[in-house]
Length: 118
Image: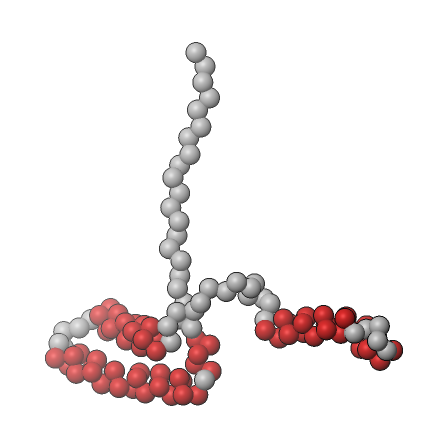
C-alpha cells in the first residue's frame, strides 16, 4: 500500500508590537503633561534607588525603561490600527478628494478644465 503523507509543522505567530501613540505629543498640553509626569516620577524612582544602594546597571536600566513605558501607557495610550496604508498620508487623501471634485466640474468651463489637467 502506498500513501502520500503531508506534514505541516505548526508555526507560531509572532506577538504584535504595540506602539505608543506618539502623534499625541504634537499637542502642546499633552506634551507638557508628559514632561511633567516624567519629571515627577524619577524623584520617586531615586528615593527607591537610594534605599537599595546595591542595584546593578541592569536593574537601573529596567527601572528607567519601566518608568518611560508606564508614563507613555498612562498618558499616550497605544496607536490605533490603521485601515489605510501608512504611505498614504492625510495630505494625499485630501488631494485625491480635491481632484475628484475638480473632475466632476471640469466640463463646466475652461478654467476648471485647465485646473483639472494640472
